[in-house]
Length: 138
Image 1 (cartoon, rainbow, N blue to C red):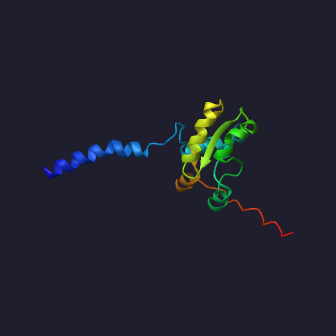
Image 2: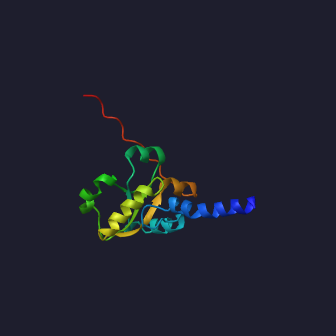
Image 3: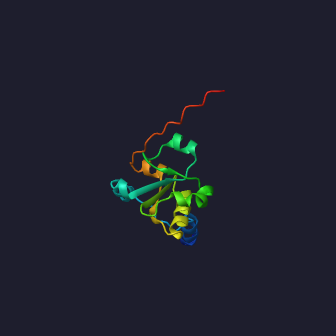
């Protein structure tokens, strides 16, 4: 009886746990192989990294990207070409998934989103980005 109660409680908790883990965005989370296939066609791809500059230098990223903070997205839409396939990037794809949804709603061709740390953990190689040198004091 105790065993069946525990099994029932576990089953009851599963839908709630699944709902809690569901992303808060609609964009497709790309696998490493999907992303690598897109990277193989750089003339058709635009990577938009929505992480802060300190996250880029600490964690690493991709060799070529457009850096736009989520709060600045609406004011930067004119800079984003509509003829390229877009992949948005953040550390674990949460922020970038939301940005991907906004871009898709504005008519951009969004392939999906990816987390840089997830990509690296799954065997992908990130580019280490050195911070710019400090400006000398005047």
